[in-house]
Image (cartoon, rainbow, N blue to C red; front, side):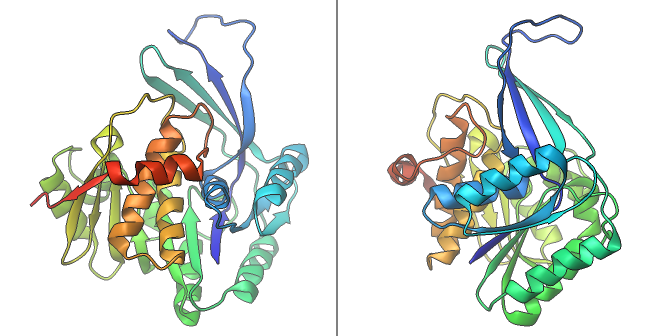
Length: 311
């Protein structure tokens, strides 16, 4: 089973405002709202592909009840620990005319050590050999800094696969763990390596190999409309994606991760799982929702994604 970790879920509120400028007034907007957070998005896309996942995290207040309700409709198992405080809200402003996206991210509530132990206990009880556990997104106040490291060790102890999709402080805190896959975008990979961002596939491949040893078996680098890279110690393949009308890229990286994990769960080799993941990312970008794909669109795109050697 695919088990998505979302320590700090959110209610995603998205506004579509062409020509958005800070300081101006925008009236009569009708935002779209849904449960969000990277792990939540992964779980949603898994379900949309016919591979319902389990979701783990912390929720609180009325917003937390909404997250729980949405997850109960799309997940096979909902393991959300109730906490005090209010599940956070994320505000996205999409300017389609200028192709700009503005995100305002709340910090979210705080958890106790006992609540963390409860969540890790649920995961440890559920974990089985061959499971795929996705550690996604930012942590939550009160959680130990090495929580993803603990989860990665838990996975290794039972023969489960652990995937990491985090950035910034959460990525640095996860550094001592060992993961099957890490999915940074091109800018996050540059930050990991301490160098300037680049879109050059050869340079990105070399950068990925700098951070592989002892930590990751594979690195999947998302590159927006330029496609993506899948890198191991011996392989590097570049995926080119078709041009499509882009509505929003928010959630596309999460869709990539979900597609890759669904591919692994169905027995696909990493390269074929990579193609499935890239197709999910492309389809999500064509939708005005977040974590929104259909099997028909995804599988219809597979033949339009080409793999090549960038080196």
